[in-house]
Amino acid sequence: MSQRRRVVITGLGVATPIGLGVEAFWEALIQRRCGIAAIKAFDASGLACRIGGELPEFSLADYIPKGYRKSAKVMARDIVIAVISAYHAVKDAGLITRCIVERGEAPGPANVDSTRFGANIGAGLICADLNELAGALATAADDDRRFSLAKWGAEGMTNLTPLWLLKFLPNMLACHVTIVHDAQAPSNTITCAEASSHLAIGEAFRTIARGDADVCICGGAESKIHPMSVARPILWKRLNVHDNERPLAASRPFSASRRGMIPSEGGGLAILESMEHAKRRGARIYGEIAGFGSAANGKSWSSPDPSGQAVALSIRKAVKDAGVGPNQIDLAVPFGTGTREHDMAEAAGWNEAVGDRLSQIPALTTRGALGNNGAGTGAIDFATTAMAVHHRTVPPSLNTGDADSSSRFRFVQQDPIDARIDYAVTTAQALAGGQAAALVLRRFTE
Image (tube, rainbow, N blue to C red; front, side, top):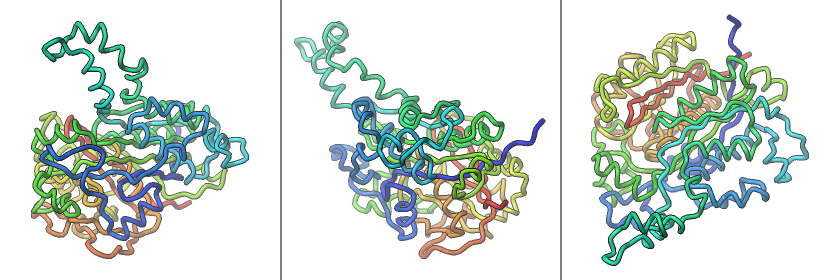
């Protein structure tokens, strides 16, 4: 068996409530900014949770070629987030793709072979546009104003655009990104809730390592700022419905006083390349992916295993894949949902896999600043981890001061700290479904 190729990180693109683009996002983390506030996208006054993380204002036209703008009509919010993240990642990596050429931002030609340019993008449950759907449903009411399936088939359906469904298919995130940037190598969509991004990045890592692509764009995106996305976890009793009046302190991962997660939107995409390809084009390298591991909760699809076995197994696999031991980990980046049962399960998994090392190294979570970004969460954490490794700096983790007794994590509280980070581990776990994944990032050396 031939030796696998080394895979490096050359571009990072994020869209978050505290910044669009990795530099703006990183600076906001350093400054301890929080992106959680009262929801503005819709009237949330009738919901028990009325706060969330929303993206800053933007224009999609700034991220796609002029000739592609008509396709915006079939882009749900999740797709838009992926497209924005892709543009930032490509620009950050210094890649010249079809999008960059057609926008007139580089003379061309493209500096990446499209047939060797792949994509792996995680997606969540894309919620329907309620305004569009409600308008069509209203035309399917009978004389008593009740929904009529017969009228829906005869009249209601015709009031939806013929391309309506294309806005809500999970694979359309990867579809639009690959078309805009002309990525023709293997393309896959992974839909495993909050674990989606880690799994997508792991698959991209494997694709390049085995030689099936030279470059991959990977990560995930999702918007949880939607009436259905807020109402569903309220029914599951997983949202914090007690802190609507103090949104900046509402998301408290691994805190003894945590009261549930906060819905948010966002995502990120990264550019991975074989080391040879990156060096050949003189790319700036953030770091290297050294290992990947994944596992699943074999006990329940709806509740975490209190032992955290899936998290522990994924960490052990990733560390073994990287060829290092737990005592060589210099930074821990757990998911930190903010619900009591999930945080305790994740902490148990980290405790089992890493042990006393956890209390000796810094830890980092972005949930206090962002809330739960669904399928985009892991990609944002991956970008954060890569920046921490690259800058050898650990930013503070908001709302983690009141640590739960089950947690050994040593979060930075106020000012960022300098840290010698040679190996970092980031994890993710799906709240429903039970998938878990871990990635090991290594400081790049020749």
